[in-house]
Length: 353
Image (cartoon, rainbow, N blue to C red):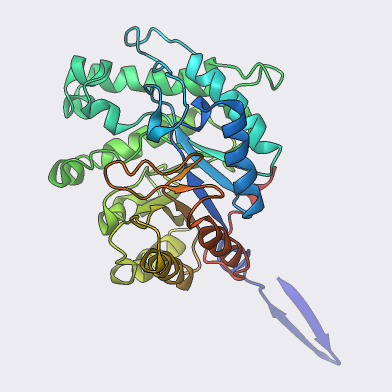
């Protein structure tokens, strides 16, 4: 309460604090690369240097084993954390991410780390072959095993490059975590019936990470279905609703989603979006159109996907080579996003190095 005296008249009133995270900071951009830790050092540094030059603040990756040569790169094969059996941990992948977070931090970039990838589950990895794809989310033994995986990643493993600290205590290097990339995106009905898995897994992360500036993300879904009312509940440990949208249809749901997040005192960003190759004026226009739409809502975005070699044109081809075709356009859009003031959400505490 503030008291103001005007002559013989005394006025008393309350100053209301603004909603946390609303209209308090600039927006920002980031990027995805799920195998960045497996790249040769020169390529890894080229990726991070490019991001730094473009003003990007966050690199998203995840803890899932990969074969060599991802996206035509010189990446090495990396075993999954539990390639030798559930609960039998091989920290090779975590050690590589330890180095990545040090290299990123030196360039003003923090990591958003997924504990697992549903693509690995669908491909029949140790969890898929043991419990089945749907069983991973419903079987009590699978849930317990995955919870132990989360604990191992966040608190049992130590980063030997940073005084043997666990990731849970490395808030200067880690922007946030998510249990899984695109959980249950393969079946929308199953996804809607098991949204509690996302909240429960988020709680397991939060029980391991006391630093609330290290944020917990949903992992993304399919466009508008990325946004579910349960995520806005105070009983759900999610901090940030992560939107994945390759349909350019932000205007159909973003206004409501941003308002819901602000009301719930949570956050929202576009964690994945991309523009299909080939390069040229049509792609340039599409990149600019996407960012203009996202920036209209003043929320951050992470591009899918930055690579360090010429685009091999594999599958759904959204890749952009750092310092290659379309890079000038994308880096310029990143810089323009960083210049947006009065952002919808304040991520500054979590971006601090």
